[in-house]
Amino acid sequence: MQVFVAGSTGVLGRRLVAGCVECGHEVVGLTRDDHGDELVRERGGEPRRGDVFDRESVVEAATGADVLVHAATAIPTDTRPSDADWERNDRVRREGAENLVAAAEAVDADRLVQQSVVWVARQPDGSRFDETDEPHPNRVTQSALDAERIVERGAEEHGFDSVILRGGWFYAPDTAHTRQFGENLLAGRFPIVGSGLLGRQDATLSFVHVDDAARAFAAAVEGDATGTFHVVDDNPTTLATFLRAFADRLEASEPRRVPGWLARLLMGKASVRLLTNSMPTTNERLREAFDWEPAYPTYREGLDQVVEQWRETDTIRMTGEGYEWTAPSP
Ligand SMILES: NC(=O)c1ccc[n+]([C@@H]2O[C@H](COP(=O)([O-])OP(=O)(O)OC[C@H]3O[C@@H](n4cnc5c(N)ncnc54)[C@H](OP(=O)(O)O)[C@@H]3O)[C@@H](O)[C@H]2O)c1
Image 1 (cartoon, rainbow, N blue to C red):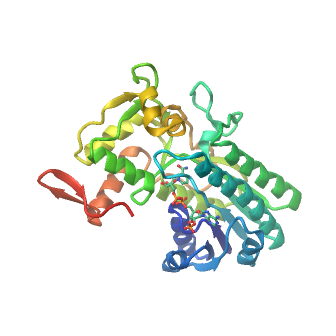
Image 2: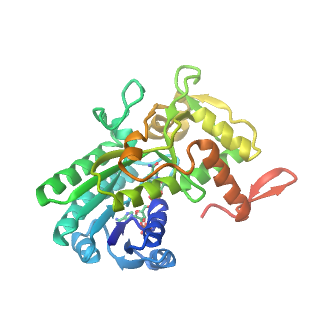
Image 3: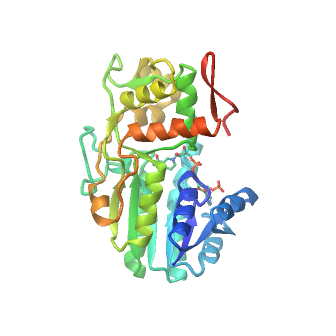
């Protein structure tokens, strides 16, 4: 098959390009600069230039593709994202989805796989949910839900298959957020943010290692099932547990707890909402529909891999004072 990946240079897309090439597919990666071309070529793919905001360029780059994947995002990595940051992300989701649908139609593709986030369906009371539950989007997730609907409608109108993969909280050695967590934990700066007056109510979050997320996308590219699936590990866990386990592996001191109201002053509302709103969900439907199970079933194995890789690649080095970074964040 020929597989077209928008977002081929991102944390998810890089792995997906390599994974699809390994499975014997021809992979075209949408790129925007020389560095992107290099990332796609290194993984055995063919880079083609374009921008998800520029429909013609997407159609041209996707020519010949059997399956299209929209894995482009502009999720802000700033600790205090501005409205403009979120608006750029909204555009990548909505306009990107519209242009991928147009390209799928124009090149007569069989299948379109769209990235989304499990947060769109989190329940207001923080209870466990799955793909059958009514979505409850907020300011940040509304555009993800809109993108899902654009793809579903496009698939129905034009007669191709669609798969919506809603990712849980991504972590991996090479994601900006995981590195930020690691840096702040080592510096003794990352607080456990709880809700309630004293910050003692912990949110339960659904994490997934990006290696496992990318293998879910590769399975959805190859499989026949259609519909919406949650891409998370086997074990939703509290943010406090995740951060303590992370600090422990980094031999950092245990993170302090701060109440949500104080964290909101430091990080802004949207970031605190992400940290304090429970979103426990399950991968049961994904496991049943596709040939997939997580290699990192819980945060324990996943965080072992993150810290191990940082050690092996000399990203962190042990000194008399504990681990330290060998270079600033990329
Ligand atoms: N579910 C989740 O938790 C989730 C999901 C996604 C991302 N994240 C996190 O968000 C952080 C941000 O990562 P990131 O910004 O590097 O995102 P990323 O998901 O790793 O990569 C974004 C991808 O989208 C592409 N892209 C963005 N705008 C585009 C456009 N207009 N046209 C074509 N391609 C476009 C980028 O291309 P260029 O290389 O050309 O910029 C890149 O390939 C990471 O820490 C990641 O873990 C989390």
